Structure formats: structure tokens, C-alpha cells
Image 1 (cartoon, rainbow, N blue to C red):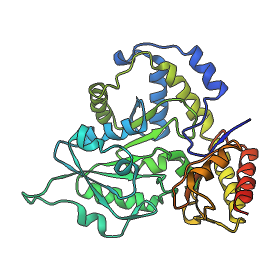
Image 2: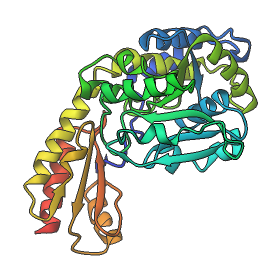
Image 3: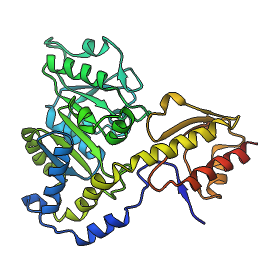
Image 4: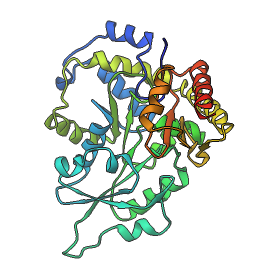
Length: 340
């Protein structure tokens, strides 16, 4: 039985072209900077975002934490949204690795409230930590693309106060697609950007950290300290090159499949689709569960549908490169049957 995995866009399989490129990759020792495939990928990614340099890292969490470590000094405070990935899902790593504290601000659809961000920036009072960094997320993990106007406003506030901005752009290209702009237009309002090659773009491993040359050189040393100095990593970078060359345009299909799914779910009486969170390839919804969550997900699994949800019926379905119309329609029909 064929299965369709709606848990995330991290579950994609490497494409045939990726597997071929990995098999044929010319490699070297990246710690010595003589892996030509890594060097090529880093150069392409820097140019793609309009920045000077880039660095291959093992994961998105690694890239975000490396950025925080490189931008800040121990004891600094980092301002970020209360629902962002760095705060919620990165194991408190900023306190352990960089020795900084996180100060969360309420947000709506990934945006800080007007006038609130300025109030959080610390002054020179001897009792306060220094504000060392502002982090923003786009696309936001709640399914929204943050408008360029908001990115620009945050960047100006940060610049006026001498504070760098880091962008968690794990799904940067989904955000760009939703906003109808090039990714570099978003990246223009951040001093460093992390984006994932393995979320939606189908690479098996890896993310990129992008910024100016001085920042990336400092980050390269910190990457080594964090255990991220890899050797013949060109085997992985080869898949990353295919990801940015071939898979970014394919994200439009993921968004179309998510739209198809949302439209189908809206017709089922016991499902409430959260339309306010529908900018990218996510479909958030509330389902009036007719049975306990475990039994419900097992019933879907028996049909080849892999999903996750919460006991109170909140679900996030994610369309990805391996999600065909057949899988979307099967999920809609199966949910209709289970809820009838």
C-alpha cells in the first residue's frame, strides 16, 4: 500500500537527480575549504540572496544557533517572537551554546505589534542585559508569510539601535512565493539568514547560513567549535545544489496541493480550516474528533495516511513534493468517511 505523509515537508525523499549528483559529486575536505562542490553551493546561495558569503551547516537548528552564537556575546538578550521556532522548538539551545537569554514578544502572524519592539530594546541601565540580536521568522511556522513592509520596519528599528537582525528563513522560498517576490528581497532586511535545503526542497540533509563575509568567517570558526566542521561533505552539497536549482520552482506545486486540500476540507462539516494561516503549504484545521486521537490517526494510517494532531483536534497537514493529487483526495475522502 502506498503511503502519503502529511506531517511535514521534511519527509520528502531526495529526487533522482539528487541521488545521481550525490553519487557523482567531486569532493574534498571542506574544513580545508577544498571541497569544490561545497564551495560552489555556498557561492550560489550567497548570490541567490544578494549577500557576500554563505556556509553549509548540518541543520536549520544548527544554523540558527550558530547565527546567535556569532552575533552575540555571553549575557546578551535576544528579542524574538513568542511563537517562533527558535524559542519553541530548539531545546533552549541559545542558553546552552551562546549563553544568552531570550526575550519573547507577542506577535500576530509572525509580526511584532506596532510600537512594541522598540520598548523591548534595553538601554544602558547597569541592571539590564544588552540587546544583542533581533530574530524574525519568514515564513512563520504558523503558516504565514511576513510582509516586506514589516521586515523593513524591524530592520530599521534594529539598525537605528545598532542591533543585527537574524532571519530564520527555514521556508524562505515558500514565503517569497506567497509574497510574489524574489528571496533576496526578503533577505535584504536581515544581516544573516538561515534557510533549509531539507524542508520542501527535498535535500536529505543540510541548511545554509548566509550573510556578509566577515560574519560568515566568524561563523565558520564557530561551526568548527560546535562540531559542524565536516569533511567530504560535497556528497550532501551536491543534493543541495539540485535543491536550489530545480526544487525552488516546484514549491508552487506544493502550495497548489495545499490549496486543493484546504478547499476539500472546508466542505466537511466537522472540520474548520484556519484560513488566516494559509499563506504557504500548510493547512491548519480543527477537527471535531469522533474518537480518541490515537484511534483517529490509526484509522488514517490504515489507509496509508500519516498525520499528527493534538487530543483537542488541532491538526497541521503539510503538502510537499511527494504529495500528489491522489494523496490529497484520499485524505479528504477518508476524513469525510471517518467524520460522517
